[in-house]
Image (cartoon, rainbow, N blue to C red; front, side, top):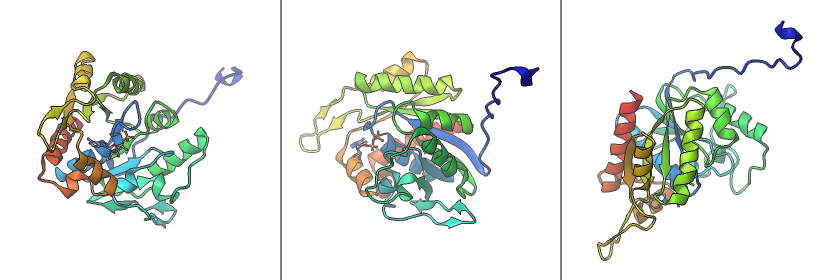
Length: 268
Ligand code: ADP
């Protein structure tokens, strides 16, 4: 009978595991510029510091920033037997469109091309044995989110937001999108949560404070922790020496590692 139905469509395929990869973890935000990639990189390094085998996949095809943040600018991954060998930095593997399309060239692609590139970056890569693959999503709720969550069984998503309402509202939408497609939210991280002046020692809550914690509590989710606005985080991230790797004993690295430990506990 089904064949007689004029509009019968093929059933969507259920998400398939990636061979050798344990948990796939999404890191997402609503808005851009809230420090999601910085957080994803430092969280990945925090997980690696716990002894996990970790890789990071930059799913931001239009604005990839992971190669630069890991000091991998200018390096191109090799292809062996039609599979890409991911680059490595600070003990984690990394795959990004920014390593494939070099320099300042913009990616001007329609949705289906983005989807197929993401597929290639997920399954056409020799990941080896991994405990965790951290996927750094682009901001918003677009093609990348839908396509990835349909193809891969994500263990959960971590939502990054700054404390102000304008970021939180979009982050809430991002969280709702993941839940809608069956990916549980493991928790919220508040980035740029407060600022301690290095000169006078006074604290200022530049973007407000506590909004992400409040949002997590309001929606029955876990609050994973807060990261301050600090020039050392900005500098190390932009210089390709993320703070968890370059200053592992400092306060900020400890804050990221504490968040990583909570995430690891949730990953099981
Ligand atoms: P997103 O991925 O949300 O677009 P990025 O991680 O690219 O954001 O960060 C945007 C800018 O903010 C970068 O220059 C980064 O170094 C900086 N940044 C991120 N988090 C912090 C922080 N906690 N303190 C200071 N600067 C930060």
